[in-house]
Structure formats: structure tokens, C-alpha cells
Amino acid sequence: DVKVTQSSRYLVKRTGEKVFLECVQDMDHENMFWYRQDPGLGLRLIYFSYDVKMKEKGDIPEGYSVSREKKERFSLILESASTNQTSMYLCASSSRGKGAETQYFGPGTRLLVL
Amino acid sequence: SQQGEEDPQALSIQEGENATMNCSYKTSINNLQWYRQNSGRGLVHLILIRSNEREKHSGRLRVTLDTSKKSSSLLITASRAADTASYFCATDGSRLTFGEGTQLTVNP
Image (cartoon, rainbow over all chains, first blue to last red; front, top):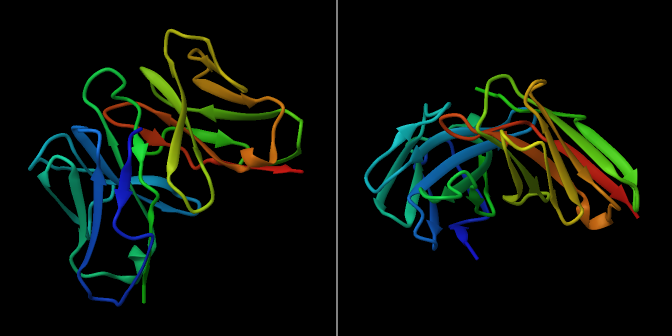
């Protein structure tokens, strides 16, 4: 079974702090994604990556950056956390080949910025 | 860019009843997927239907796709309390685009 893990289930940070959210997948997937999920807004894509050291902006990249130094790991970075970044963050991965359309999600990190 | 939109936003039924959720989208697609999310958890892929398919089954799930109407439906038959979750449709494009989901509550 594909397993996508996220470093924390719950996180509380203060405004202005630098925040790292880590995501690791164990299925050798090429593609990885970061979403945030907010009530009434659904899932919105922040950043994605189709290969190591490669990144693409999603729909709402402002205030975020990402890092993909290894194929299995995709990190989301909040350089200076703000209260409007309080949200549920979901990481996902998918393969490049057949079945690439299916994304496998981690359990999510609920971030509260005070 | 939000493409898939689920309807209704919320649905409450009794155990044993069937649940039907709908999804509408705006542009042409290669495939449409349905995902499920238990409260506070990640999404789990349920089923994928390609644009040249009209109906697909998986266990108690039945998905239909009408590309002329740009709509899909997810039917869960003989629902169980454990089916309580949010259900999302996702359409492809350059990447997956998710709707806001239907919150299904199945009462025991």
C-alpha cells in the first residue's frame, strides 16, 4: 500500500515563525503536491513537484515555498507564518506512469497560527 | 481554479438507504475521480471514470459520467454509518481540481 506520511498531525505556531511541514512517500512516486483545505473553499493547490529539485506554483503559492531535495520528500515552508495561514495542510503523491491520475494523500497537518 | 462542484453540500440519510451525490464541471476532461475524506483526515481515492466511460462500479459504489452535461454522480448503495464522510469529485486538467465536497451523514 502507498503510504504518505506528514511530520505532524497538529501544530501551533506564533505569527512570524518559520514553519516546516514535511511529507514523505514510500512508493517512489515522481509527483508530489501540497494543498490547503479551508471550510467553504475546498482543496486549493499551493505547490507541486514533478521531479527532484523541481517545483511549480499552484493556485495559491503566496507566502509559501517548497523544497524537494529527495524524491520521497517534499517540504512546505512558511517563511513567516501569519494567522491567515491557519489551515489544514494536505500532502499527496502520484506516479508518472499508468494511474498517474490517482493521488494518494497523507493524513494532514492542522496548523494553528496565533 | 475551481472546476468540480458537488451537490448537495450536505446529505443526511438513514442506514440502509442509498446516497446520491452529484458533481458538475465546466471544461472538457480526460477523467473524473471521486475521493472520500473522513473527518480531520486525508483524502482516499475511491474510483476513477474516464471520459469515454458512462458508468463504473466498485463494490457498493456506482459512478456515472455524462460528458454532454458535464456532470457525474456517485451512488452509494445500502449505506452504513461508516460511510459518514465528505466526498469530493476531482477533475483532471493540467492537474487535479477538487470540488468543495458533499458531507454525507449516515444515521444508524
